[in-house]
Length: 449
Image (tube, rainbow, N blue to C red; front, top):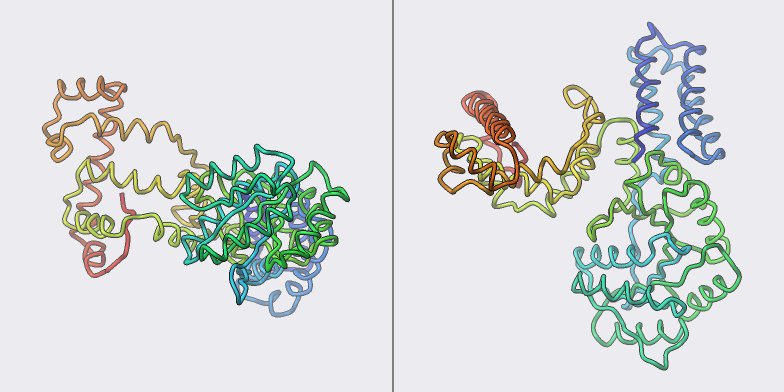
């Protein structure tokens, strides 16, 4: 997400740091590079123009030009302006005073409406709500079946509809009644889509809006389509009055132009982003955190929130104790890998880390998930005694472990070598300043490996 733009902006700031002082000339050159970087990231030209004007107005001021660290001042200005463009603050979902709150999920066919409906229902259920879903796509039975399957996997209710309910309005009305009687406080209405915007679709959606009075009308768009997603959102808002946007497939969009354009062009906030196919791969959109990621400063807050939701806290505290006391076994090593994998693809986790200091090369790290599977398989092929004491693993045991895990003796040797090095490093930490510090900390989780 934003990989290309982030890399180019960091190059601009690096060049500025190389200057003895900031002048009008080198600032103009930097602004030209920023403009090109934004346009190449598929950011809407109107957004680019406004952003550059705002940055120029602030950056060319006397305060910046005479600053002790002008490049840092420019980074600060770009960060502030990116946040403004993205929305200044997180835009939360709104809820009705009298439940159930109705939320219409709209968008073009193939944008990911049905999957997003299920993901949003999961997110709501994890945040204190009792959602129900309904598909009102009477034209594509497969779409309704897809929602039923997703709802079953999440163990969340979906209104099935009766044989006589043949119109979207009929289905939606009955679903709202069902949600009210069963104590559900949110009804998510997955609407039909088209390959392109047409009058029939809009008439149908307008009728649903009139009958249901939804608190939220969320437009779902595929981030990979770039400015087409922005144009569709703008047209849906003009004809329907959307209240927010959900961008799907953000994990596959290295440019990020849609995310940077959509609020400025439509006037409506980006509320969630889809960052994968799994049910938990939906995140609230935080403008300040996204701006931080674009500028290479990472998104540690999102990492911590995700970890707090998915990591077993009791195990984490116990792991911290073992690290301090140098009792870290191969079984613990395997358990840490499993805990970390809960956070999603490791490349996605690494992308949240700030690209500074010893972490600056993380953007170049390519994680082979198959290698991680091999590591777990090797440790699983060991006996409990071997996992507790790696020193007893001789040549014969290594051959047996390799055969049992479908790997080679060389791979087993490599794992044991890496594990021994990790233990040695942790031992040096635990006896020194870091160990004392860790011993005093009462963290809810631990990721030291």
